[in-house]
Amino acid sequence: MTDPAPQATASYLADPADVGRVLLLYSGGLDTSVMLKWIQDRYEAEVVALTVNLGQPGEDYELVKGKAIQLGAVEAHVIDAREQFAHEYVLRAIKANAIYGLGYPLFTALGRPLIAELAVRQALASGCDTIAHGCTGKGNDQVRIEATIATLATELKVIAPVRSWRMGREEEVAYAREHGIPLKGGSEVTPYSIDDNLWGRSSEGRWIEQLDHPPEDDVFQLVGSPEDAPDEPEVVTVEFERGVPVALNGERLGLVELIERAAEIGARHGVGIVDHIEDRVVGLKVRDIYEVPAAAILLPAHQELEFLVSTSHQNQLKPTLDSKWAYLVYAGLWWEPLRTDLDAYMDAANAQVTGTVGLRLYKGSVRTVTRSSPNAVYDAQLAGFAESGGLFSQAASPGFIELWSLQSRMAWRLRQSTEG
Ligand code: ARG
Image (cartoon, rainbow, N blue to C red; front, top):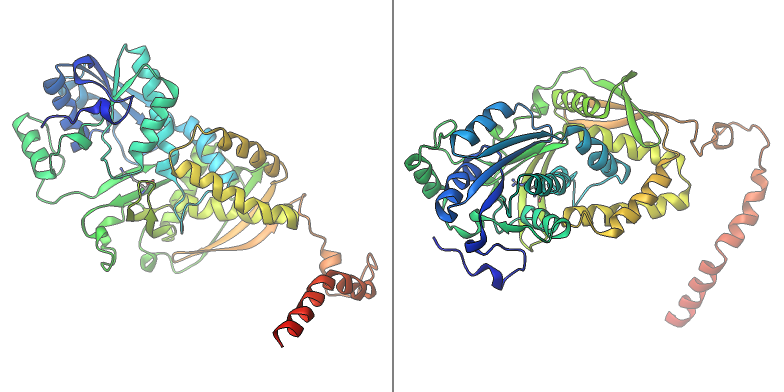
């Protein structure tokens, strides 16, 4: 259990000899609990534990804090960052219609830079020289966390024991037993690897790695089974002001509460289950099971409204910028200036995104059924089939068509003659 020579691979990795006081990103789970002890043993270092509340459902933060102290942390902090997460991260993702790949709304990717930023602040405030996290060497989370630390505080070093200690799950459990680390719910069944926050929940590991294995029921802890959802559909309305969701079913709510409420409604209707194959930034493909009931409602509602108030030219450009935004965030480059530049465009585009969208939820499906906006680039009279208005002359259309198709017709004929 020796570290590989860390200086050889990256400037920000800690030299074990220089580790004196470590800020540990502590979730209370097996990995980070073992780390809490292991860091004290291995480095003879003090550990300051930090747990960040991003709205993980059902978490008891006082319990986590108590556990950290019990395992020898010299300080244990819990930061409630839900408001900041909702307003500065999730809201930006909504404005950017942020989806990576075939349906991942990026909740973990959005959370990591904030968690890492808070770790940097707490590390500096608590006099730590090093930050420790529990990411493995196979995932995106290490990239997001370490890129953030290396960006924000060059004086802080990083250790990632799970990446270097080469303990398997069983060895960790054995280590935990040996060091009196309490294990949740027995240890016979290897748990899924879970990450969750306000914006969603992911599960990895176990049978999920077998691509031909359909999801087992026990993986779903947030979204109810679509089959068991109510037999009656429900229409939920989402109101936006300048791209910000402000009311649900007519009730004005703060963003955190609105997201939580949307998640409850979606979960009840079995909405937001995503079985996702993903191209990780580190190259591997992986399968994730996502439960994203709030995103499954708020993202399509936003996108519908944005589409309605934007011109066709804006509507052609926006998705390309959206996907660039999503990729930067997915790939751990939250601090990349292009992301903030893109956000400026997102804000400009969203200045018009005011109005209300109604979505019909039914046994796992979400479908937009109503839209209204004072900024809709839509005129019912012009668009209507009734012979009305005389606001423009339909007789003018052929002239338009002749010019519109001019080059295409010419080019087509040229091809015919060269091919023939
Ligand atoms: N694959 C997703 C991502 O890269 C989710 C990762 C979840 N993280 C975890 N430690 N279980 O964003």
